[in-house]
Length: 114
Length: 112
Image (cartoon, rainbow over all chains, first blue to last red):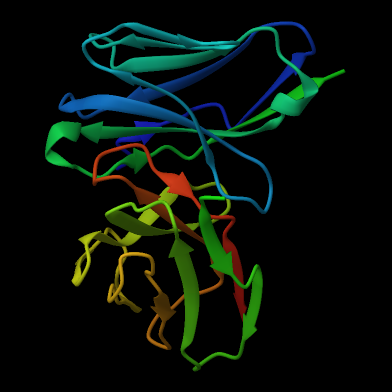
């Protein structure tokens, strides 16, 4: 049973518009979340994180929103650029202070069309 | 330049042979990890190590072995006991377990 779900395998967005990537989780003990971006044949690169004490974290064009009651987080990319085309993974862990491992979702492939 | 290196990028082996994938980091990170990625699936944890000379099984450790004799190095051996070894293997490290992980470029292993 997947604890971290990304129900959209793929998403296409026009350049300059907003991309919204969604992630749902089932384990209510998860309290620290990461987003990674991955190009083909490369390792994932860390994008942005959020802990459960916040409901929003922003870094440039990337904003992550966390809705704890819905066990849902989303990554917003504004404005989307063709270089953002990649697979995006969300990952969750339980109480990072005690060094729990991350559980990764299956990923969403984002295509930003020029 | 600090980072994580994995070699080789592509590896081909015959069924029944053991093969060792290299992972080195110069980030002075304590924790290191091995994942495999299969099409349509997220990253699945094979083994992890919180500190030198210590390692733990992840979710899919069967058919794999690791060692952590040096802080910088965490090689993964894919043994002949692994039923479906063909996959993309990713190594990662973090300052400590539970912190953001930084990934290497990956090794694509094909076993025929």
